[in-house]
Every structure is written in C-alpha cells, then in structure tokens.
Length: 197
Image (cartoon, rainbow, N blue to C red; front, top):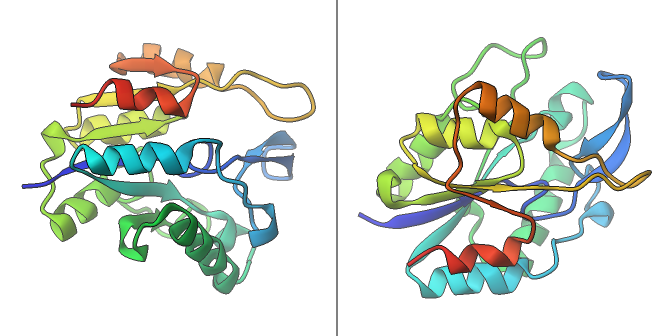
C-alpha cells in the first residue's frame, strides 16, 4: 500500500480570496472563482516536491460548493484545477472534490467533515490511510481525516489580517469541543516536511 499526504486546497495549497458572502452576510475567506484570482501559497511547490521525495503521493481534498450555489460554470473550475496541476506537477486524478451543498443538493458522504473523498482516494491509489497525513486550516479537514482513520493531522493556523483575511481561531475552538487533537499546529506550510519520515 502507498502513503499519501492529503492537503485541503483553499488556505493550504492556494490563498483564499477575502470577499463578501451573501449567504453568511459578512466578509470571509473564500475559494477563487476565476483562474486570474488563483495564487499559490509561497513555498507550496517545493513542499510538495519534498513530500514526493519522501515517498508520499500528494492528494488534494476539497469542498467546492461555489459552482453549485453561485451557478458558476464548471469550465472555470477546471481552468483553476488545471493551473494548480500544472504549477505543482501533479495529475488531475490527484484532486478529489465535493461540489455538494445542503440546500442545493442531496446530502452526501463526500463533503468534509465526512470522509468520503479520502475513501475515494484510497480506492484509486491503494492508500494506507493509517500511515498517511492530512493538513488543513479548518476543523472540517481534521474531522474528516479522523473519520477516515488518519491520525497524522496538521492544523494550519491563519492569523487574522484586517481587511485581507479572517483567522481560523473558531476552528481551534471547535476542535477542542469535539476533542479533535491535531498532531501538529503550524503557521507556515513549509514546516510540514519536518514531521514526516
């Protein structure tokens, strides 16, 4: 069996876009919805290369409901995804996404915090989940990994930057309430290579 290093997408692979969301009636970190808005996190390509050198398959696990709830063209999502694959040197099949959203679609088992996307990746790549890793910046990432049997989890803490992005302190509180204990708490994506063997 193979080992994978799972990444959330927005916030861990690329920068989130800070914009007003009508659904929540506030400014918040969101996914880019145009390829022109996509900006990869500094150092992520080198980080993925080092993970590959250590024998891990990098896999992106992401919730992407905007294309359903905003009625956006899937073609634009694929342009964004193609750019991510091209810049990171990964295959399209290494990205697993859930487009579902309650209220817009039937309930699913793939939208994080559900673990369905991890199981899809396991089936496709013959992955040993117990010896794999997951990094994310939301409690949903850690909860989904935990449900999938991944114990090696890393929480990426984002500080709040006024008028630029919100922090993710609420996720830290939620994880504590749910008794979810990430193995590591970091502030820089490049730190993850220090933990894996």
